[in-house]
Amino acid sequence: MEHHFLGLGLSHATKEQSIGISQVNEAITQLDTVTQQNAALVEESAASADVLSGATESLTRSVQIFRI
Image (cartoon, rainbow, N blue to C red; front, side, top):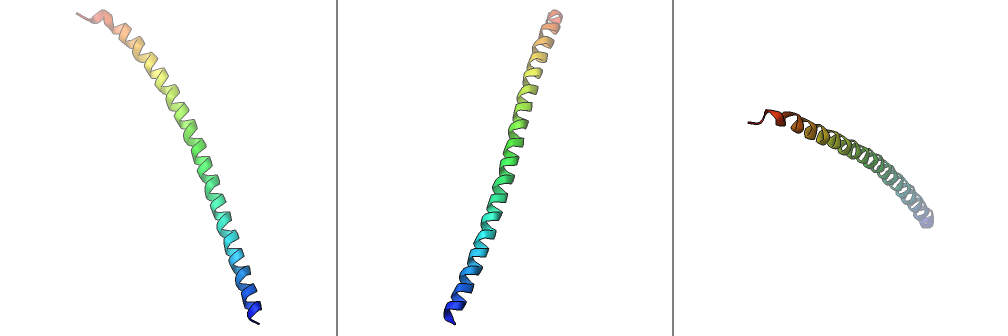
Protein backbone atom coordinates (compact mmCIF):
# COMPACT_ATOMS: atom_id res chain seq x y z
CA MET A 1 0.00 0.00 0.00
CA GLU A 2 2.91 2.33 0.74
CA HIS A 3 4.11 2.01 -2.86
CA HIS A 4 0.66 3.03 -4.08
CA PHE A 5 0.80 6.30 -2.08
CA LEU A 6 4.36 6.93 -3.27
CA GLY A 7 3.22 6.46 -6.85
CA LEU A 8 0.31 8.86 -6.33
CA GLY A 9 2.66 11.41 -4.78
CA LEU A 10 5.06 11.17 -7.71
CA SER A 11 2.20 11.43 -10.15
CA HIS A 12 0.92 14.55 -8.41
CA ALA A 13 4.41 16.06 -8.25
CA THR A 14 4.94 15.35 -11.95
CA LYS A 15 1.62 16.99 -12.82
CA GLU A 16 2.49 20.06 -10.70
CA GLN A 17 5.91 20.29 -12.34
CA SER A 18 4.32 20.08 -15.78
CA ILE A 19 1.91 22.89 -14.90
CA GLY A 20 4.81 24.98 -13.59
CA ILE A 21 6.83 24.44 -16.76
CA SER A 22 3.82 25.38 -18.86
CA GLN A 23 3.41 28.62 -16.89
CA VAL A 24 7.10 29.46 -17.32
CA ASN A 25 6.83 28.83 -21.07
CA GLU A 26 3.80 31.13 -21.27
CA ALA A 27 5.65 33.85 -19.36
CA ILE A 28 8.65 33.55 -21.68
CA THR A 29 6.38 33.84 -24.71
CA GLN A 30 4.80 36.98 -23.26
CA LEU A 31 8.24 38.46 -22.50
CA ASP A 32 9.33 37.73 -26.07
CA THR A 33 6.23 39.47 -27.43
CA VAL A 34 6.81 42.54 -25.27
CA THR A 35 10.49 42.62 -26.23
CA GLN A 36 9.58 42.58 -29.93
CA GLN A 37 7.03 45.37 -29.37
CA ASN A 38 9.63 47.42 -27.52
CA ALA A 39 12.14 46.91 -30.33
CA ALA A 40 9.56 48.16 -32.84
CA LEU A 41 8.90 51.23 -30.67
CA VAL A 42 12.62 51.95 -30.46
CA GLU A 43 12.86 51.82 -34.25
CA GLU A 44 9.89 54.17 -34.59
CA SER A 45 11.41 56.56 -32.04
CA ALA A 46 14.74 56.56 -33.88
CA ALA A 47 12.97 57.33 -37.16
CA SER A 48 11.04 60.16 -35.51
CA ALA A 49 14.25 61.55 -34.02
CA ASP A 50 15.82 61.59 -37.48
CA VAL A 51 12.83 63.46 -38.91
CA LEU A 52 12.92 65.99 -36.07
CA SER A 53 16.66 66.45 -36.50
CA GLY A 54 16.19 67.23 -40.18
CA ALA A 55 13.35 69.64 -39.41
CA THR A 56 15.48 71.36 -36.77
CA GLU A 57 18.34 71.84 -39.24
CA SER A 58 15.95 73.21 -41.84
CA LEU A 59 14.35 75.60 -39.36
CA THR A 60 17.77 76.75 -38.14
CA ARG A 61 18.79 77.60 -41.71
CA SER A 62 15.48 79.38 -42.29
CA VAL A 63 15.74 81.67 -39.26
CA GLN A 64 19.41 82.56 -39.72
CA ILE A 65 18.39 85.43 -41.98
CA PHE A 66 16.84 87.10 -38.92
CA ARG A 67 20.08 87.19 -36.92
CA ILE A 68 21.47 90.60 -36.19
